[in-house]
Image (cartoon, rainbow, N blue to C red):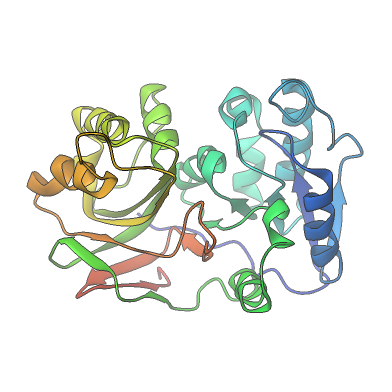
Length: 296
């Protein structure tokens, strides 16, 4: 499967900021927004601070805001304010054909996995990376890596010192995101992983038995059979169960007999370090490293 990489995002380019999921802390948002505004032109909706319960405004508000950005040919990237929950509620009504006609970077993680999957199905790369609300908490090195990921998306990225839960080598297109969202998308019939992919997974606040259930569901649906390898980011606030089973134990128990390599410890997810990386590039997994390469 060949993926299109949207154009690099350089200083002075137009980006959109959208809140398609949960509401967010205005002060955290403002710090991240100001950092972006020092580098890019920003288009955002005056209704972005809206709230409706656990959502950033009602479905129509969130759908209209994101839809306008997806369809705008001038916008080079859409950076999400926060994850949380809500993306799946609006995914059906968005102008995906217009997005495919004018590809741009979709930037976020967690709940934003919903949109990464939609981009993946259309053969368009996207950026798994922190949201606007996290930018104000990041140090200079992390912010430099964030800007570099937007400006040089085809540059090689190397995750080293990974722990082999199931040793071996594999290569394929790097896809994935949040485990719970991938399972929910599979249940809704919206997940279509490319055959022979390297599947990146992370999650937060899931007990080991629930991680088992999520993976078992994906396996029963045939989705894990399409993976040539699995790379695990952080599983934050996923404590060891009272029976002594750790999250990594649960994962290994579910995937060991798939016959594919599984490596843990990649620096992405809901923890303090969430290294940006492109979904939709070729990746090689071997000897404790994940190395990404531009798909020709």
